[in-house]
Image 1 (spheres, rainbow, N blue to C red):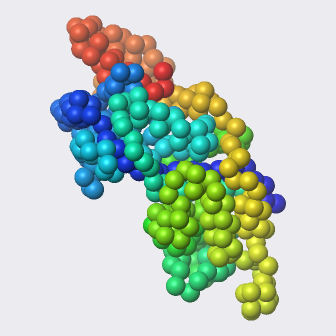
Image 2 (cartoon, helix red, strand yellow; image 1 turned 45 degrees about the vertical axis):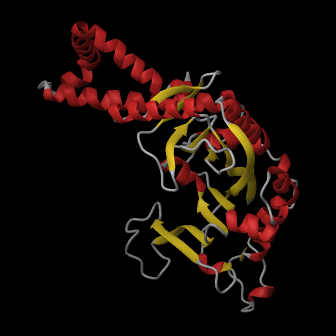
Image 3 (cartoon, rainbow, N blue to C red; image 1 turned 120 degrees about the horizontal axis):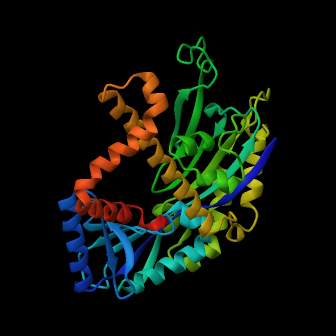
Length: 381
């Protein structure tokens, strides 16, 4: 059984030829100084419309002095300190949650508008990387990298991980028993790359709970299998091979990029006797991926609203903070000399008293703590 749960563009990175005026760059510099002083990212408001962003205390190679993040429904921005609008001074990487909520085109338009509202002047853009992701619900699927058929010069890199449910997963009696391939990557960036991996496991390990909302699936369902096939096209593949630079080029030709990638690299079905791979049948998973890619990719949307994305992120933050509070409270109780029975029965009352006692003489500090916390989670309010 192979059922499509989601298909859409998961990455849509682009560079902007343009620049910010000096007054905005000075504002970014002040924000970077504040972040360095706090040893934590700082909240700044940019331009006449006061666009909110977190800024880091460091930059990135390539001359990018400022790193901004405009939240789950925004993007990560890399900005050079240069006022020449004819240079490529800005790099934008939309968050996956923004692409989930708005789709690629509205995401691009919103980020372009945000750039203008921050005071920027754009004279051009160039798409740098695109990832097209397809998530399939499967039953009993196991990845076997040796069943991947690709050009002889194409790099295939498996990742080996522990197989769930086995008593001794790292003591195999043969190369595949006791171990399972969780991921296989074919090709490399900035060219063409395809990766097949266990998306359910990755979503749980990285706490990307919004994917379960997109799939309409219970994250606690232990029987759920979700495998992702992701086609990645880097700058070399897009520009040199398909002449894709602008958003208009992308809309005209991205279907060919995805379809040709899934035709040029194939994943074969299990247990075939014919030694000639050209006559072997494709895995049902790969057939489903090819059928999905043959549809109108530009119309695909996850169905999540911005409100749903924000609610999932907010719920995750609440659970994270609650777990931290609970763990720290138990540690505090042990340091106070409480027994296990006292901790189990009296901890809530003791904790309320301790917090009140801690903050009572520090009312001024409390306001600063509250502000810092609000700045940190501003995009979830």
